[in-house]
Length: 425
Image (cartoon, rainbow, N blue to C red; front, side, top):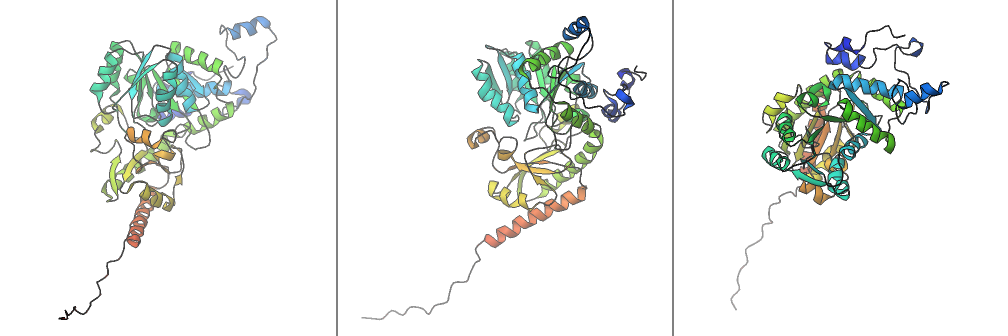
């Protein structure tokens, strides 16, 4: 019997405490202090009537792990604590979570409004897959809130937001756009992967459904794939039903790894955000950098909005290099304390251009149309010492400058010749 207090005991607890204890204020089997990994595909019943009641949801219990699993349920309860949601559904990847939400709530003849700045996989759903279903998709300029409001006012069933955006770090005014959506009865979905529940809670700002790629900051160690969706119970019932039938369930071992990672989210993000701000400030002073994207900088176009709706600015920085891809190819391999890899949110720092990370699914022409040039580099700042990351970046830029100097043709003095003497014929 569970003799520990229920989740109500976390109502006044801080985020760090909720990250550790959310979903785990229960007595585990064998009095284990850690969440057990339950790998059973099915769950047996001697009482057929009880089995039937569980299958219909009239009694607590488990039937089949594609539908629900004890380890996965603890993960779902933990994200509910952090996002202050009534219910949550876990998926096998972030894209499984995003696509399942869109396919759950959209149908032939519906209209969805979003922005041009979104993760490349999400953009592909908007540009390629939803139109096949007969869903009308309108993608607006991300900075143009007036355009988004105009398009929403024309009527839509769903407004999809991503803020901060990947990889350009643009910020959307969530409450303003939620108000526009509610005037036409549209559902609002927000991707909160970059901000994390530590920095932003979209449900508290009026959003209906929040999605996360749990692969990123929530797990935090680059060793697992997962996605999470949370919101009101009646909405999550629909999402859960879609998952049960379409099958993108999260396996229990992956759920365990994400649970373990989430317990250190606050500690990790504290260091990562500190270093991200320092790197962003340095990049702003580097002559080989055309522009820097980080909402924590006062010069960011949406800095005021970020301050109003976020508690911190995240651990992602992006910047545009002078010389484009030619400079990218020299700078990134020179870094010592970083992986060049297509992931983010891990304890190790990761660098990568959009064409091999966030928008690898898009062609060059598509990326340029989205305002993502070849010189844009995304940095997922890790938990390494800040000074080491700064020194590493400085030595890499110094190497780029030396390489450029060596490739610059040396000016040579023209040879001195005797003046020509015209000979009279």
